[in-house]
Image 1 (cartoon, helix red, strand yellow):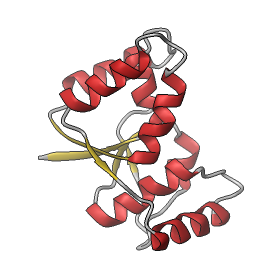
Image 2 (cartoon, one colour; image 1 turned 180 degrees about the vertical axis):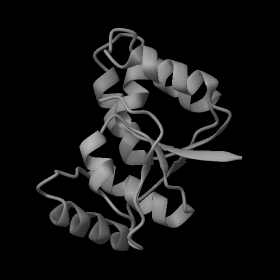
Image 3 (cartoon, one colour; image 1 turned 180 degrees about the horizontal axis):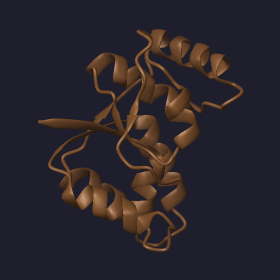
Length: 140
């Protein structure tokens, strides 16, 4: 089974038809047959962006459930330290906390394919083993 990490941008674009990347992300996700993985930080960030729309939070909750997305916590003290170190290392890119948690999740699960709109970041970031990410959609 194919496994993808999913970042905040594609979640928001998928659920907001007004988003410029909506059509490309919808086509990508609607044809995907595999498992989606993300982190709580990504969900919190997406909920923040979608909260301006009346149905946004409910749409996000429904999407996570319907897609059977696996959502991992990355807030143990050791993980917070690793995330902070990565954010410092990639400060010029920059890397936010949600991105750092996705890199931690990639290390944990061995998943390198990512659905993201962050071309610059995920072309630059590497796992702790130096592995690059493979973006599954070239939008953004």
